Image (cartoon, rainbow, N blue to C red; front, side):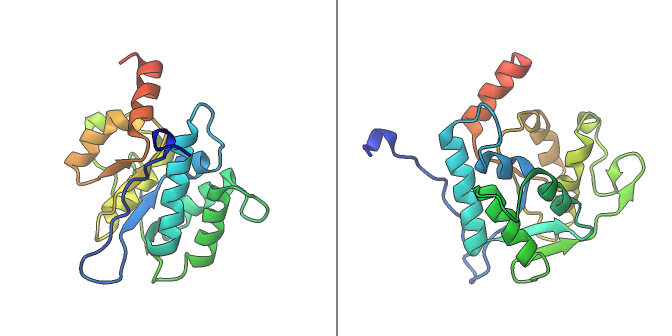
Length: 189
């Protein structure tokens, strides 16, 4: 492989104060992209998502909701028992570690009739935020470390990232340039 085709992976953050690695919330589309289940995504983006999932399984920590809504969504979209993709492997890891406090943090996210979850920000800029994705934001806001949400190919999150940041929610886009292309194609901006 020549240097022109070498895939550069984003750096994996480490904790300077000890062995505990960084904690993340992982949006389902990261898993789907890593599995090759997202049409139109480049092989570089898929490899980057697979790399992040591999690193998270090796040294990271995952934040989930204690009611396992996120896990159920992962299970609905991937195949832990017989799937061969990196996303399937990640789901197997989640199912094996979700009760392991050394690898996964479970946070209670209280429901809210209007916003989906009490922890979802009250902000008119987020009124059109997908109801099915609000659990990821609620987990990030409820967790004491306010971990970033890993996002791959859902370009609508670009529109919401500034409003989310104003409420302390960081979104880490793993395929930023490609995501912006999807956004321009979908919304003409």
